[in-house]
Length: 294
Image (cartoon, rainbow, N blue to C red; front, side, top):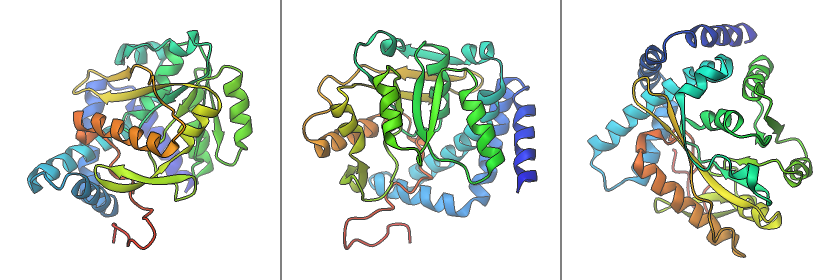
């Protein structure tokens, strides 16, 4: 298992030396292979698209599915660039829009709300290269210790980020937020029914975390959405630091969860193939409902 992980990391290190446009073509080709071979993930993504876009003709959903896998392959291989390329090269490929420096100036703690688009890893690099505050996030450790160490080293190599495992008490993260560290929050995964509410996501009940709203209210945080777009060819990525939400959170975390999902829906509609459709977003069902992934 370690040999496979070491070969993977070696391949990523070599690929990142190529011109970016060539990396993009190789990544898209790798994604085409994933479409053909990763049967389980393809079925999950297909089911998600069927549930979220029943009004689309089947050929349109299939087109989005194929493009999704092309971009998924690209995003996986681009980890090498993000983890190992010089910062000057990355700065030339990451195009920042909006108020990236908000967290530096804010007298209140800042939460970056970053949905699971395929270019999400780029946002973690952007907040280290284009602003000065040390960001904190919570991450899920990889099962392979060597790969986990490489991932963590690559993500933290610019010195302006701290990653805490889910096993670490949340009070440690809260302490760093109170000390002025912006919090990098990825709110749109299914972690079960605990501390979640079933609110619509493209009209389908989805277990949605209440923690972002509760944390933002408890710590009086400014909430700034951040969305990453993968640009075509060798253009790189666009990281959009959007206007902070003026009326979020509210005293109603369930209503806040619904508002958050509606925002993510609107962003998905701009680039439907770039959302993480291979994730089982609807894995947890309301009591009495059967699984949608059978």
